[in-house]
Amino acid sequence: MKLRLLHLALTFLSLFLLALGILLYSKHRVPDADPVAYCADCLNYASRINDMIVRVPDVRGNKQFFRYACDWSCRNNLLTSGRCPKYRRSFLDHTDRYMFEVEDPPEACRGIRACP
Image (tube, rainbow, N blue to C red; front, side):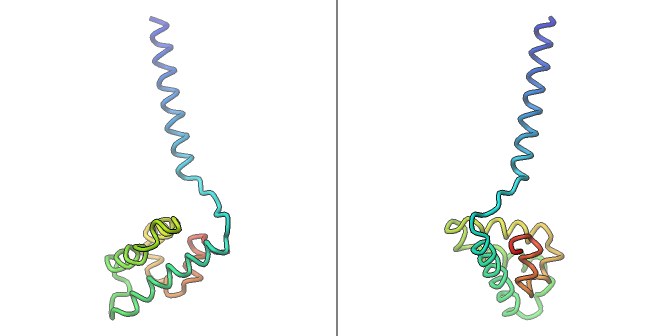
C-alpha cells in the first residue's frame, strides 16, 4: 500500500513539474540573433498594417478590421522569416492599444519590444 502511494505521489509530482516546465518554456522569449533585422521586420509589418488602415476610410478603431489587417500583412512572411507570427500575436494581445499606436510604427514596435 505504501509503495503504491509513493508511486502515485511521484507520478503527480512529475506531471506537475513537467507542466510547470512547459509553462515556463512557453513564456521564455529568446532574443533574436540580429536585433536590427528583427526591428526592421517589425517596422515593415507595422507599416503594412497602417497602410491598409489608411487606404480604407473610417476603419481606424475597428477591431475586426485591425485583426484582418494583421492577418493579411502577415500572409507572405509567415514561413520566410518566422517573425511575423510573433509580431501579430503581440499586436493582437493588446488590440485596443496597438490599433491606434500602429500609426507610428517605431512607437508600436518599441511597445512590443521589437525595437530598442
